[in-house]
Length: 419
Ligand SMILES: *[C@@H]1O[C@H](CO)[C@@H](O)[C@H](O)[C@H]1NC(C)=O
Ligand SMILES: *[C@@H]1O[C@H](CO)[C@@H](O)[C@H](O)[C@H]1NC(C)=O
Ligand SMILES: *[C@@H]1O[C@H](CO)[C@@H](O)[C@H](O)[C@H]1NC(C)=O
Ligand SMILES: *[C@@H]1O[C@H](CO)[C@@H](O)[C@H](O)[C@H]1NC(C)=O
Image (tube, rainbow, N blue to C red; front, top):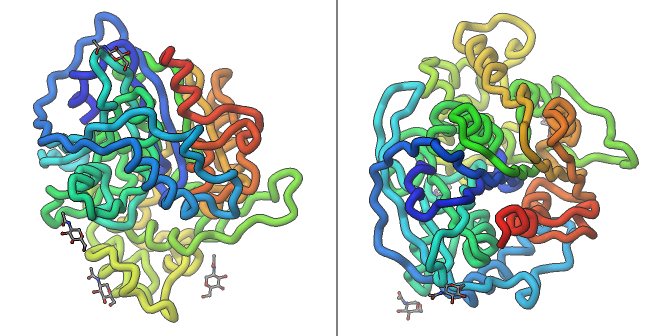
């Protein structure tokens, strides 16, 4: 999908993505397509444009900001210093993609957002949203802002458009397979490596970064926040099978989030579908949660889950899951989780990892491991007191005071792109 925007791209393109969990992690990178690199031809359509004013973006950000600034780690949104400096033009991109795991070709959608004042080539941010436990809170639904009464649901995209598209960058964002207006009942491909990388989804931006480098595309700089890069390790942590010591200087660490169990259900459904593991969901989930899990995979309706019978991440899976051979599907899932890790990579250009010290899904130890193994260009930036969502927000809107002395991703990308 990212090739669909080559019309705007020239010297500098940037990637920016959420980790695969619910609102929280950011990732981004700036890439310079190498000279002599042959662009793949993309077939895509751009639908009619929607103009959104800087004022409307700022007002939507002002009302959404507190939802992400848990524990109020930031001073709040200030339209004077953090406001949009441009109106933005939004267009839905429609294209097709072939799913590596299944060979199917499907129609997919995404968003293109550009500053209304853009009149020459501008750098591009490719923004990867993380998990959305919904079929339609997708980036391209931002075009619905053409209806003055529309209330945005894809808030992570709003923040990125207000930051990047309103301040000099083009932003592209895929809706992903199994989401968005062309979904047509198809199941999501959540954390399925080939399918998500293909649509610029990616296990946060790390998979995408690695795929672009494997394709010979130069990347000048990358930033990610609260990323987990090892699915096997993450599943063990969420299941209570591994634990980590308290981060240095902390006296407590928050419990695992309630929304992790629904994420695991969606991952089970996705792996069953795209890796052809029939019966996985039914046999991996404890009997008392099976019906609920199957239904949730179909409707993503959290309100339909009876809180008195809701699984959490430690009691969702059958007892034998981590202990014994249960069946071929569960063993295959575990091998696939290991295979899909993004940890084993030497970065050859600067990459920043923003991570929260109170992230209720990603323990700092899961991030620092990737930083330590990633080579000399990696840099970890701790965000004190930050939850999963607050880490994401601080990465976009924070200052040195909240970001351990570092600048936010917009400032960093602007300096890398010479804006
Ligand atoms: C192009 O945009 C830049 C920045 O908005 C502006 O300074 C410049 O005057 C514009 N040029 C034209 C020809 O409109
Ligand atoms: C927006 O909502 C108001 C109040 O409900 C209504 O009067 C108006 O017609 C709506 N506008 C559109 C474009 O739907
Ligand atoms: C979700 O479940 C609730 C409770 O059962 C129900 O009232 C609601 O209509 C459902 N929503 C959708 C979109 O099906
Ligand atoms: C999950 O629920 C069980 C009770 O069924 C409880 O003992 C356990 O602490 C809970 N785990 C988490 C992570 O909330």
